[in-house]
Length: 386
Ligand code: NAD
Ligand code: MG
Image (tube, rainbow, N blue to C red; front, side):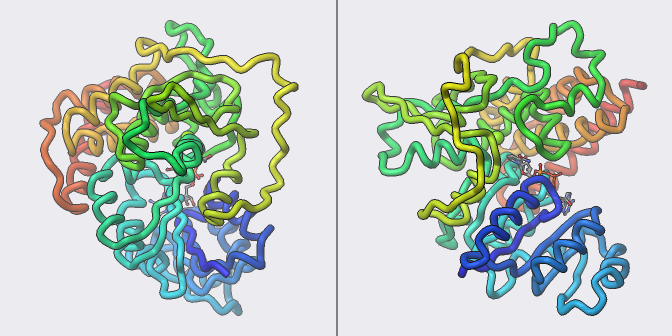
């Protein structure tokens, strides 16, 4: 029986994780759950999975959640202290990091320091603080299992091979909802257009990241740290069918890929059950149902965010944290109807232009760079005067 904490159980990844857990009650038990704003769903999850600890992000929501869970044997906490308590709960063996954005940094770092293995969905953690996290993982001897589908594919394609034999990593990208939209129309697309992802159903922030292709930029940086591979060896291919989830090319010219129906339950199940494989209920892949699997290079003029990510990772330690913060603000402003779609990339670029990259020696310093990036991006957004 494996004891699990889920940070962000009410989100898209959190819900899929609970689906897997409820299908395998003989293998997994929930120790702690945490959530942001969706208290109604959270209360239902608490009733169904009976965690010992349940945490809401805002301390103000604690009394209401206590009321909603009265009669249940659960300790209800709030705020960052609560998130840390959930992440470090004694019985927990593996923590599913499924909070969105840099908000996941502190509880996930606490989990590693407490010796917990991590199933990592929250890619912003490695984008903002990759070197510090990988050092922590090594220092505390924990395992870090990728949940992002591309990184799970790479992890599966790398097993049993030597790092020095890797020629390159090929991350696949669906291209998002605007793959075939003329560039000139992108300044006029609506929030609903951008949220209409062709292949994946996900939280709002990552769905917008997929539309701008910043998601792939974040994933390049994530792969750089997870697989200790220089970014020059990480390449992005557009693959609109999202059947090949990523590939690894070796020095002998052989390429190993992982394929499957696009469903996050597959990488989640692999991260939780590793090294075993468990049933997921996912529709088996029928390659004869496809008229073809296609691949091409991304259009960097139309989707500048991908290049911004390469620029950030080669500029120095604080730049990816600042880029990520500016992206989080720009996406928030776009979703609120305050920014045009094309102004997301503009906000990020202008924030990066005024930042002097410097080294980051602690999570506190990462949070400072993150704060600076947020404030600067907010000011730039106000300057658009929309
Ligand atoms: P989501 O928005 O659906 O869920 C986020 C979860 O985090 C929710 O439970 C929410 O309540 C909680 N949360 C949000 N802000 C918080 C805060 N400030 N403090 C504490 N909790 C907070 O997001 P998602 O789509 O599930 O994505 C989660 C992470 O996984 C992201 O980093 C995303 O990039 C990554 N990811 C998601 C998918 C996917 O298919 N959804 C795929 C790959 C990677
Ligand atoms: Mg992905």
